[in-house]
Image 1: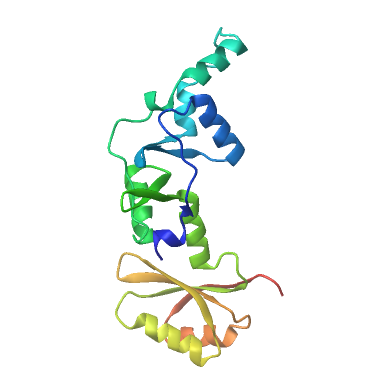
Image 2: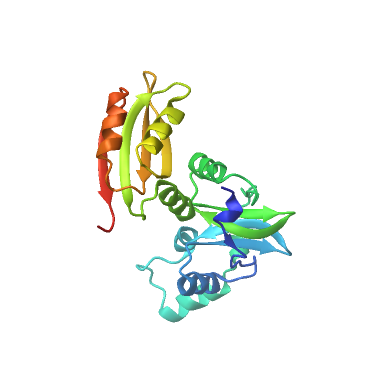
Length: 216
């Protein structure tokens, strides 16, 4: 899966001349947590709701409401945007690369650039949604949690056992463990899996759980 498959295309952006008051209004009305900053068509940074809260006066300030509004309406985003290289990603990058960058850089979103132009933004929520879809968490089905030997051919072996015993695999994930073992999580469209479970056990495969979820 590519970044372009999960990103929000053509995101709302602001400029260095946008005031903090305007940026706060845009975030509130659009339910955004961050906004890319673009100057003359070039991405120069990204500001978050946390950035804006840090530069906004404290509720304990002695300033009047009029003075607060005046201050926020005069302070420009250009004065707070971080002066550092902007982290961005290509729309053709794999989704897992975006997840890795977010994790390593401890950020919650990455602007997406193509040919020097901002074309989207991808967030941690987009990554979570993709993971849930990959695991079939919102779909009805039977989840089989298996422990298998971590060696070539095991995936084919398990798939063949499931298929020969009337199973239909809709989702699959492998989690490698230590000591040459792996957890293999399958989601089947099949509800009655007793025959499948027995066949797997007969081949020495550990069935940790088999749970149906969804509509009866």
